[in-house]
Image (cartoon, rainbow, N blue to C red; front, top):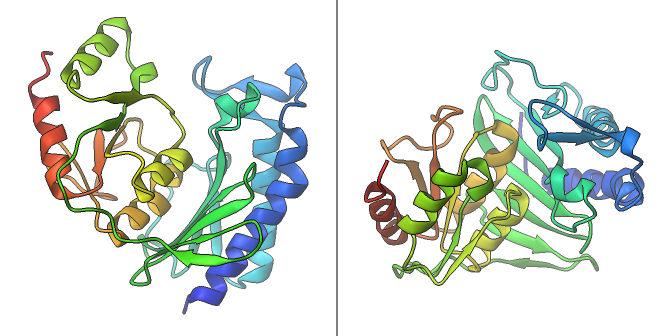
Amino acid sequence: MSFALPDLLTVERLARDVAARIILPRFGALAQSEIRAKTAPDDLVTIADTEAEAALTRDLRAAFSGAAVTGEETAVDGFDYAADPLLFVIDPVDGTWPFAHGLPIFGTMVAVLRHGEAIGGVIHYPVTQDSLLVLRGGGVHRLDAGGQMSRLAPLSQTARLETALLPLSQHDAAGRVRLAAAFGAVSRIVTIQCSALEYRMLAEGQADICLSTGLKPWDHHAGQLMLAELGGFAATEDGRQWPDVRPEDHLLSAANRASWERAMACLRGRAD
């Protein structure tokens, strides 16, 4: 089953439409009854998540006959991401916690997989109404709110460790101190906890490294393909690369291999 740029633009259009119809009208207007916790008090889902995923699932199936679709809110344990010749993986509102708290730090992510391999992806940013698009072998493009598309330049291959995106909120107090101390020489430590924005910062050269935990397919398939297309590098401490990672792994993504090695040296020097 072929998948080319016109198909990717269709995915972007569908994601943009669902964001405009369902997600943005709920932003800053959620009732408390429309927000609930899933696995933890800060692991939230809103009515915008569930309605947007349902709508985008319907739209993708209508546009791509025979395609399979899964997403964060409907995912089941044991799902075989390698079974289908065309599979869409949706994260309807990546960054639900800030979204639910009225912060404009969220995006809509759609990855396109062929028998488990990411061949394309879209990250749409509803607030700014622009998107990042990636096609395997075709680089990464930005589609602005006016419909103009421009190709992102490859990432610098110079080793640099000035801005680090670290998941401090995913650690207890002692763990936060240890992680921050490991990167004490870094100029800026930022905690966003929104993969859509983290991958944008990496892709546009605004961040040098990003450490991710609690790894989920919908959070990383599109972004990891973007990073690879731009010359970036990502792996766990024991050398696993996406998608051959475990949910409990720590995935370190960097603008280039040299920056990854510098950041990994910081992590390996961190006291347990």
